[in-house]
Amino acid sequence: MKHTFIKMVMIAVAVVASAFADETFNGVGVAITPAEKGAEVVSVIPGTPAADSKLQKGDVIISVNGNNTYCKKMEDVQTMLRGEKNKPVEIVFISNGDTLGTTIRRTELTVKNLDGEEVASRLNKKKIRGDELESYADNILIDKKLVAVVKQGEVIDDKANVETKNIDCIYVNKDVIDAPSPVTQKKNGEKIKVKGVNRNSISFELQSAGTTVVTVTNSGGVVVSSVLVSHAMVGYNRVSWNSSNVPDGRYVISVEHNGFKNGKSVFLK
Figure (cartoon, rainbow, N blue to C red):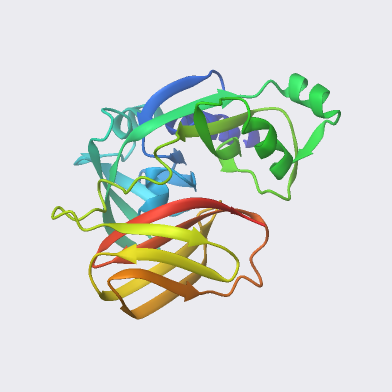
C-alpha cells in the first residue's frame, strides 16, 4: 500500500516535477495526488504562480477550466493544468469544506532530477540538509532561478536531512520572481510591488491607498504571519512583523490590495 501511494504521488508530481526525467513545460506550480473527489494538492511550490493564489496544501481540486477532475487519472489532470504559457487557468477547489475558485496564469517551469550518487559523492555524505541541497541546486542552471527542492512531491524543509534519491529541483525564469503577476494586476495599470523583506519589516509600493494584507507563507504553503494594514498609503509603505518563531528558510511574501495580489520569494536567515 505504501509503495502504491508513493508511486501515485510521483506520477502526480509531474504537474511540477517529474521523478523520472528532466523537462521544461508551462504549469502553475502544484504537486497533486488522487483524492476521493478530485486531485489533492500535495504541495504548492514557492515562487510559482500557484504560491500567489488561494491554493494550499490539502486542498482538493475538483475542476480545471470547467472540466471535472472526479475519477480522472492524474495524467489527465496534469494535462489540464499544463498548457499555453501566460494563459489563465480557472481552478475550483475544496478547502476546509468550502468550495472556492482561483485563476492562475501558467509560467515556464524547469525540472531537474538530481543524480543522487553524484550529489552524495560531491558533498561527501549520503544524507544532506535541505539548505545544502538548495545551495548545490542553485548553481546547476545559471540561467534559471531555483524556487524549490522537492522529494516525491513534498518541498524539502531547509533543516531536514534527506537521502539524495528522487530529488527534483524546480526552476523558473529569472524575471518571474520579481515580475508583477499578470492575473493579480489591475487592468488600469495599478501596480503592487514587494520592495524589501527582512526579519523586522516588509516594505511595498501601492498606486492607490486602502486596506492591505501582507502575508508570509512557508515552503510548505502554510501561512506563518499575516499583517493587516488598515490605512496603507499611496507609494512606499513599510510594516513590522513578528518573525521570532519563524525558522530560517525560503518564504513567499504576498501583498494583497483591493482584491489583487503580488508576491516575492525570499530566503530568510
